[in-house]
Image 1 (cartoon, helix red, strand yellow):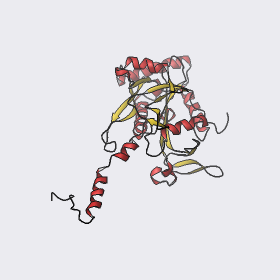
Image 2 (cartoon, one colour; image 1 turned 135 degrees about the vertical axis):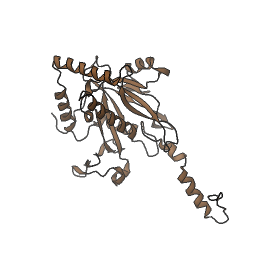
Image 3 (cartoon, one colour; image 1 turned 120 degrees about the vertical axis):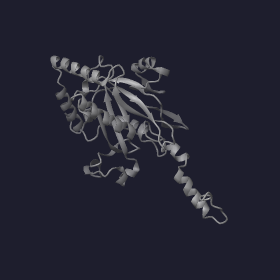
Image 4 (cartoon, helix red, strand yellow; image 1 turned 45 degrees about the horizontal axis):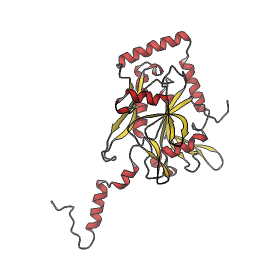
Amino acid sequence: MIKGLAITPPILGRISIGRIVEKNGKRLPEKDDQFTITTQVQNRDGWIPHPYDEALRKEQSNHKIRAIPIRLLFNAPDLNLRAEYCLFDRQNGRPICTGNGETCRRYTASSMATLPCPSPDSCELAKAGCKPYGRLNVRIGEEEDDLGTFIFRTTGFNSIRTLAARLSYYQAVSGNLLACLPLALRLRAKSTTMSHRTPIYYADIAVRDEHTLGQAIANARELHDQRLVTGYDQSALDAAGYQGFNNGAFEESDEDNLEIVEEFYPPTGESELDGNVDGTAMKTKPTLKDKLDRKAVNAEKPGHKSKLFSDV
């Protein structure tokens, strides 16, 4: 095996919440309220939709994909979902630093170094655009390819935190049969003060609608027993997964990096796909603190009558 090359699950296509659009001569990310499933091939109009995309749209209301039936490849949650802090060079797409909040791997002038990772809030280098970055591999249409996966990438706290919790909990309640559970990747919405009450869409995982949790666990045990009879070794697959991911310093290949930066690390102020807050909205809509600060400044100007305490 080539050292330094991460061996990752085979990719058949992509899952995204949004797309890249042309605006004033620039290619910028645009959020959406639905999933899109594409192949790994692009044309002038962008990524080519995968046949699963059309099939699922016909089954769901308003032809919008809000749920995707999936199974997972591994029993270990951190093999299905890898999340870390990442800083990319926006010019060449090359990862500069990745860390987990404790240690990081960083390119220096002379070599790759392992250093303390204080998290973006406390790191001087992180001001250049370090943020959480997660990759979730899932199986769709398992009858077509037993080991092929579709990848969902995100820099959203909501998606990463929710997916990590779900995977850990489902692994626990199923008795480590995560890879056998009939699950669905779902789109959720929430609004917050920071989003100015506009919806934020994020990814979640749940048991499929046709199953209760108990039925899903029973289904997983049945599938697990069938796999044992055929000689399917899930433990060996998880071990191979760990070995493959640990073989490289960074997971992404050079050919994917520029596209990742374009979608998830756009210029400051632009809204990345599946982020938590629309950066443009944050710039154009002042917060309550902004308004109070402005009033305080105006109150200090000669001849200005303050209204801050007019009702007192």
